[in-house]
Image (cartoon, rainbow, N blue to C red; front, side):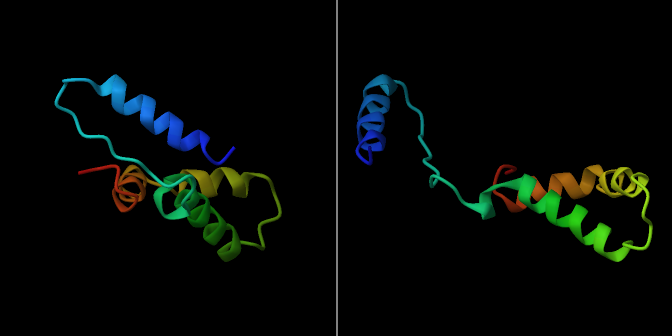
Length: 82
């Protein structure tokens, strides 16, 4: 099964053909390249700071605590925004 990636890579290079494009291969899994991990970390930190609120509304507040600029930062830190 480990050779599946090699054969897939071989086929992708042949599909690329004469078109001038750049292929960027990512590792199979890397938390550093996953912006959702950073978002969950921010939600977890909010929940730990506000643990005394026992209602389910705290989860809603934690999710709404992530502002668009924070989300952009998660994607930028992961390398998806140039």
